[in-house]
Amino acid sequence: MWHIMKKLPTKIHGDLLQNSELRALMHRLVWSIHMKPSTFETCWQLLMEEYGLQDHDWLNDMYSIRDQWVPAYFRDIPMCFLMKTTLRCESSNSSFKVNSTSANTLVQFMLCYETRIDNQRYRQRVVEFKTSSSVFMDSTDLAIEKHALELYTHAIFTEVRKEIYKGKLFCYILNTEDCDDVRVYYVNQLDKRSSATNTFTVKLELRNQSVSCSCNNFIRIGYL
Image (cartoon, one colour):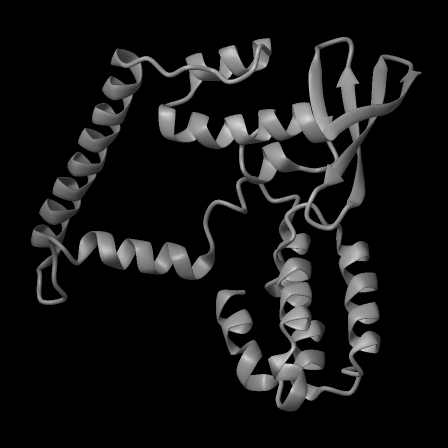
């Protein structure tokens, strides 16, 4: 995904290359974390028609393999948004080449591997200690934020708090339905950037109090 979007300016020539609105729309479309595949396909076709790019060979080639690089097609894969293929490869290389080289024997590599893992565990313990020994204030009066503050490290809580804050300001329940042992909430989310409204379906299993949402945010990132 990163490589494809980086090539975008070199593949679109002429006046369209200077059109900042086209580039912004393309990035917003591709990088959207809430969009369903059907919505992506509809918006892509409309965007191509608006700028006369229906016959653009490279864009058509990239669209034909959209299920291999557009985030909308990976929304059902647990934690898919946290780590990309390229990032995983580069992250591993960067991590291990500090202590190891290609000339190492297997025994030397395993010693370097264990050293690196110990370093990661030590950094995790430092983070957990800072979290448990310092005060971090909540910004809302919601019980879910106070609970999140107890569960997460400060770094992760900072990200989770953004979701809680946006939920309080930009989300509201549109309608509620009860079906057998399931209560369904239809939640509208206001997008302050585009002034659009996204509607999500939240299902509460009354029997075991489990919750699922059509945004798949918890599945993809681990944030409620």
